[in-house]
Amino acid sequence: MPAFSFNLSDFVFVWWGLLFEALPFVVVGAVLSGVLECCVSSEMVARLFPKNRIVGILISACVGLIFPMCECGIVPVVRRLVRKGVPVSCAVAYLLASPVINPLVILSTWVAFAGKGALWATSLRVGFAYIVAVAVSLAVWRFLGEKNVLLARPAANHDHHDHASGGNRAISVFVHAAQDFLVIGATLVVGAGLAAVINSGFSRAAMEPFAASPVMAVAGMSLMAIALNLCSEADAFVAASFVAFPLSAKLAFLVLGPMVDLKLMAMYATVFRVKAIVVIMGLVTILVFALCVTGYLWIPAFPT
Amino acid sequence: MVAPYYVWMTPAAAAVLLAMAAACLGNPRGGSAEACHCHDSAPSKVGQVLCAVILLVPIGFGLVVNPRAFTMDGIRKREVTTGSKNSQLSAAMAWVLGETSRKSDPGGGDIELPPNPTVLDVIEAADAAGPAGLKGRFVTLVGQCDLLAGPQSERFDLFRLVVTCCVADASSVSLEVRRPPSKQLASGSWVRVEGVLKYDGEFNSSLPILHATKILPIPQPSDPYL
View 1 (cartoon, rainbow over the protein chains, first blue to last red):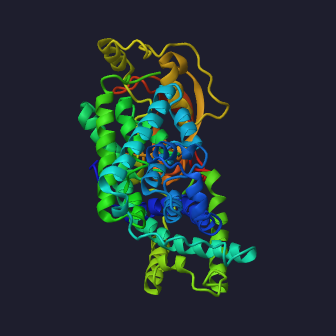
View 2: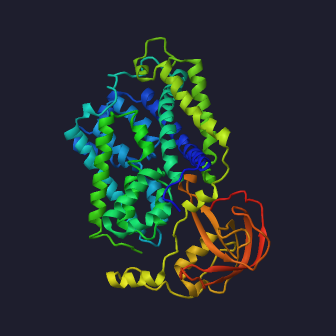
View 3: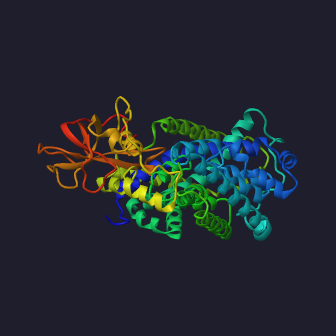
């Protein structure tokens, strides 16, 4: 069987599956972003947020434990958080970490790896994701420059408290949600389409030769994570099924997938400049690769 | 296209989208007579039309192509090797690498299968218990046929698709079935197979082969995914 072959029916089947699964979460994210816009003031954000940027980044990477969001629904939320004055680096930390460091994904990872080193897989997935999210956020803050990252400058000090209340506020929430959904939904359709081309055409058996060496295994699993575009609740079960690959290589799939894939690249374009997307995703990929290849030295290959 | 526990989410999301549309039609400026600068980040009219057209494209594809399931080639691409590793080779590798935490011998003894086991249950049981646990067991399995060797072949794969969230993460798990020459089966058709599990495969020592005593074509189950 060839490694890749395109079939229109399979492509549309996977495309619809991705959209059916992701659109409800994008709708939830859009509504939450509308609530943020209409009910949360910039002053409230400034009061709640730590003044120390490093502390802010370290905390933001853990916020997914309290406010879990999947990688599709989080994009409209992060758009609004940034407009409300949340520092961009902290928003990036939340964006990258929340799809992995949340109770649902931790539980699904544990279940997927039950009997195959669940404690190792779950703790390392969370740990690596935290390290990568914090490191990339620090790089955005220190080297990239927070002003150079965003697509559009956030409007200054605009709150809806002044002119919307009660029923009007509810309508405002839905109007803002609709605006966000229109843009992000369209980018999701494009990203999911690209993802469906690869997901439906790629043969899983083509991965077997990649298990031969650490570098090839990690690289192969990383490419598969970017290409398959699975949601973070499901990817642990797919990763666990690749029995020929040691845990270190599977961690590349588990950590990189929720942070970098074709669908997300399209959706990030509604928040960040292209150059920033390239740098952020490039840094994530390099860090995950380095952590997982060096992991061959100390992580058990097939723990039980 | 999605796991059963996701099915309710689509109509719920559709209801919320209708509420958004109603809010936009009723009050396009968010209920305020004042100029609202937060709407400056909203797309232009042209942008809104373009986004709406993009959202309609997959609907158009779906109406034209109308896929109901994966093609057989699509399913074969998603086949995974869960449980289909060589247990003797794995034990040897573990000895060479000095891995004491990994079970070198999957062990023996009976393993309990659920009352109506699936293909996945049998594969997982084989992985856990090894040949001694399943050899000689009589089971009834439901699945789809993959007749690579032809519709009257004595061998075919009985497979099921395992879906966690949606068909994008679907993986195909299968067991080999051997049968006496009988009527034709079609690839992709659903069957109920009754038979005995034996470990007499040439290539793979860790997965049993189902020697069928009875094969009955059945309609597609209401929930085709595991």
